[in-house]
Length: 221
Image (cartoon, rainbow, N blue to C red; front, side):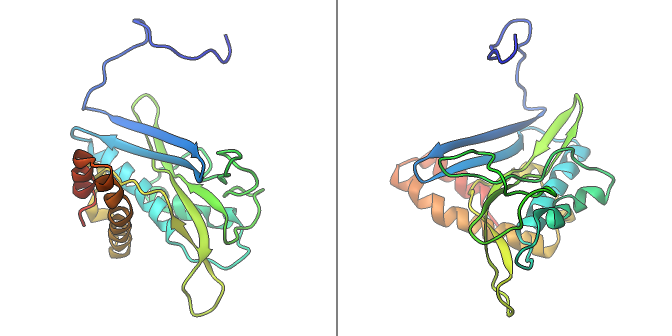
């Protein structure tokens, strides 16, 4: 029947293994904000294609996140920055690059986003940035962050950029560093420093030692 919850059964269940990719789309609504964060992980040895595709999705996420653009720029004007690294080798994804995120409203909040019919980007808007890549029957990749549109530190005001506010490390096992530019690596290291500074003390405050050690390992430069 339509809309019936899926429950595991002997016919459809299967064992998980370390030899494949997992895409985890997570989120929640809290008193002080809404989260929508996707990470893709591989606990074994990824194939060269999986590693390159993941790295290029990450490059697109970084390229759009660190973009500086004029005020009143439409999201549709800049969304190809999230696709360019994939386009370079003839890959693409068939969904939108991001959607507005409401507080006490919808996780997918109209009218902010990167489609042609969304409103121009302005400081104070929250949007997701979520490029991906999918190979039918084999694996799927998506890297989704929540970003706030903020004023950029440029000589001429008031240009805009994004501040990524979701603080979750990316899977080091899937990153091919040789594909990244020095600017992209710098961006990653700054992001990891921010995660350590903001999340680390909270894990220590809650005495979550194992989780704190995991965070330190996964945010090394």
